[in-house]
Image (cartoon, rainbow, N blue to C red; front, top):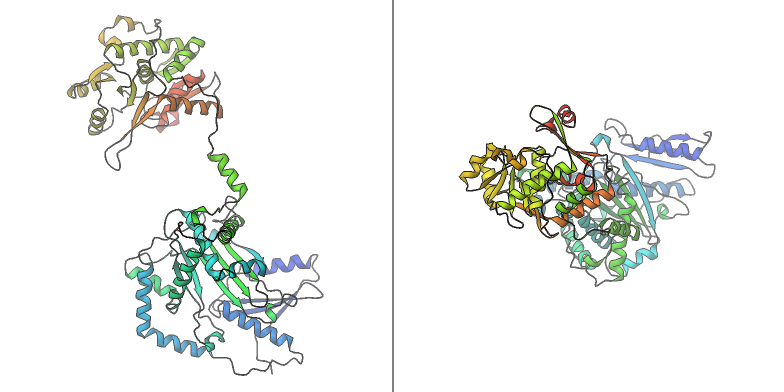
Length: 620
């Protein structure tokens, strides 16, 4: 007599407009539904979508059986189906009882082996910092997708011919791929283990499999086969501890002060399917719809068929990790290319094996390759401003507001006149080529004039915010070895205490009659700067220690501005808003770009970056 099985539901789709599509949608919808623990843990449904075949849909909770146990169940079903007389095949011995598995587990939990396994696993992974994929979606917002590939036996035989297992070689390629993707952190794979040590265990349908972390230290100076040998040895060691549950390992790690979660987010399960009716493609087609895991980035399930040596590969992956920007097919291609390269050149170090395909390599080359364009190798920032002022002397250049909120505009000729007069005063004060000149002024027209005047005089400007803490201001002034600085009256006392000569931004403060009329024409001072001369020095925040000065040459800024003008061209009627604090590098193009392109600049009032109303007022 056949054993008693749960009631089997039969669902027919033959009346649907597209029976095959209706059947697939039923399967997808049902597979996405969580199996309730208070209901049937095993559900079997016969789906009819064709007159000549049918689908047997089996759905089991992981508490009932692992993958090996499910194969045992399906094998038994197929044997009953193939019995000609409708009777179950003869069994030489009754199937082992799950109660024996439970008894063996209870004995293990009170044995010295359990403590030894715990200590060994904690020691192996306790100090690791696993490399994990960043997640873009919440747990409830993640979707699991599946990608399946069948690998013919002659391709798998290439790996077998090396004398290594397919698992070891493919795991070595997978770990190498993850190493290159993550760059940092330890590569750890979750490896499901049968946890069946006796023939009776292998014949028992139950959930006894365990999953444990396998650390793969990828050394790109070794070969793929060397790494495969290392994995084989480490998996053998891991198998000796396979009875210790993963959940208890995570708890033990927390107890020991290590990270107790997130050991891995890539699992690799490799199982051999014994020769059976289940493994004969002409009679039965088997499809795995879910891996049983839902939180990992990807679960890889490989089934090796004893009947013909072929492989079925199923990838169950999260759509917030593998998306349009990094498709799972691309990741599969990376692993396959590493395997192919490692087998073709068995002595080649991993670092020499290509992982990217031709299209990917071409895209990266196009992105990283320098884009050559015509550039005036003799240009300096001061020469570019002077040349533009000659071409468009009457065009508006600088718009800003004074302390009373009144808007003033300087033409290019007027701007260059003020720049030239201040530059001459710097030279008269003895400024040397490439000498650092701190500018202690708030954002204003005067600040713009001062920066360009330092360039015109042959020096390098150093922006110093007078509102910063005095300790930082003193540190910057001392570090750049300033002998003179452009400032207003409020900073003259500080400069004097450091022995630094103040150069007032407004010459009228010193009674200079030539600047009493700021609109009076003044020719540019003779240019002395070279493209390789220092243009400015910006200091870091000092959050990790003493602020450090970053030194930039004229040619670097000229090249940057030329690229910006090609990529985002300014018209002569455009106006740039200068609002970024000059102590940040983004401010450089606000200070220089407009003058190179013949456009204008509007100087936002101090503090305007904190509110759009002030920005509007500053722009006039």
